[in-house]
Image (cartoon, rainbow, N blue to C red):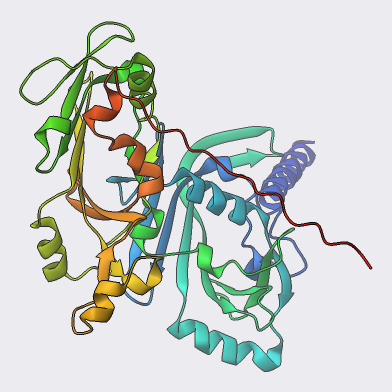
Length: 376
């Protein structure tokens, strides 16, 4: 009787262990097996994503309670991180690479690939997805992203330790996904300059180069009440609605791009030239962030400028001020960026714009009636 009882318990234990193994590997028991296991079904459990390429670039994306970071020191773009999580969740194997092409594909991937490591919080014991015990962080997937297929509707992927490559695609998307897996940390950085609600701002200061009369500082003086002064401390009578619009414009201000590839000598030449504006925002927690703008030059032929002066002096360089962009220098990290005037220009208006007696010209659109042509 004892032997039968022991045998029953052993059988039950084996069934439970087998169930755990089967359930933990439920996504691996596909037609292609382990070598094609690229999809992450539970993206909420992802804690880290690591990318590395053959150019010795690598980047670590890490989840924190207040958002994702890049290399544990820069805020990550939440939109790009969300796109990556969506990609990991929706990527599917379209087909295995044929034996005829497999060696060639793997050889190419050995010289040009992005290594992807996925870390998740997973249980050590998972009983039928009901009982999950001993959760811990573990590296759950490692694979290599290669180049794209000839039809640009798939990307070659190779699981670590596998000898067979696959073509994957994004479910419901026509195109390739290789460009989403970047090992360049700049590509993942958030482009945010200011993100402060009006209620959180203590003061805003705008300095305009060589124009102290139009430079000013606005300080909170009660709930939705402000004092505006010039840089000599003299009060400025202002239009309340314009000031409220201005102070509420700092909730989400972004730059267009990092300029990390600008040569150091050229960068130093620009930031040591006279600035155009210097805008500083101080929040109630005592933190100040400043952005300094500089003139950006562009080829005159790109814009609808009067080029007569260049025609008269053909030997001079055909450069004019770019009407759409400025260079920017961020106080935090001393980083050099590209600023779009369409986004940032509304924050750089002079003091005269906010004065109570200032009247702005009204844009008038004139419509001309087109000549009517009789039909034949």
